[in-house]
Amino acid sequence: MSVIPTETQRIDVGDAEIHAEITGSGPDLLLVAGLGGRGAFWNNQIQAFATDFRVITFDHRGCGNSTPDKVVYGAEHMAKDVLALMNAMNIAQASLVGHSTGGAIGQHIALDHPDRLAKLVLSCSWAGPDTYLTELFRTRREILISCGPLAYLTVGTYLAMPSSHLQPQMASARAFMEERLAAFPGLEVELSRINAVYTHDLRSRLHHIKTPTLCIGSADDQITPPGFTEEMGQLIEGAETHLLDRGGHFSPIVSTEIYNKHVREFLTR
Image (cartoon, rainbow, N blue to C red; front, top):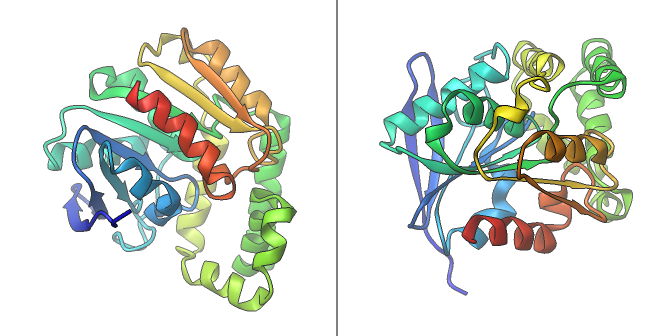
């Protein structure tokens, strides 16, 4: 299969410039990354979905190739960036696949600007915190502050992927982690993004979402356990829920084929 070319754009969203990449043609599809904030998270999905959609990936403010050193003020702030990007690109409506924090962003848009979304996929996301999630991110925050970015990224990587997937890739642990360390956006930006996770809670509003929604997660996810996916599916009227047997929190990377199959089937139905 031939590779579909990708176009790069620099999108002005007011107080930051967002690095966006556009692949394919057809109805617009936004792939919104999670805590890491980089469009490259979706490398295993872009070509697969670009046969049916104009796929748009982007680096969040402060991350990747977008304007650096830009903190965020919660998931709602990040949702405003997505809307500004859509406006700048003259996108009246798009489908959105949001992974983890990207799913929190998608929830805000579906609730406050429902006309902008054709379909919504909430991937390994959550409606609101519980003790498990709060303590997990409190601990990750303390590791970042006390032990530094390398320890923080190492722990996060181990949490995000099953060992059976991760172990073979770590023949050179130093090279593996140096790549992730090079993409670290800085302490202030990362702490603001962790705080966005802490403060996201739309449990009391999720039943108002009317956008056709797929909630997809993994049975072995240690960061947003499967109960979160099931809860979203119960709160959103008419939502479909699917749990993969394996994939961890990074199921789009770990279980690409089956993940893409379920998401693509939902989006193209």
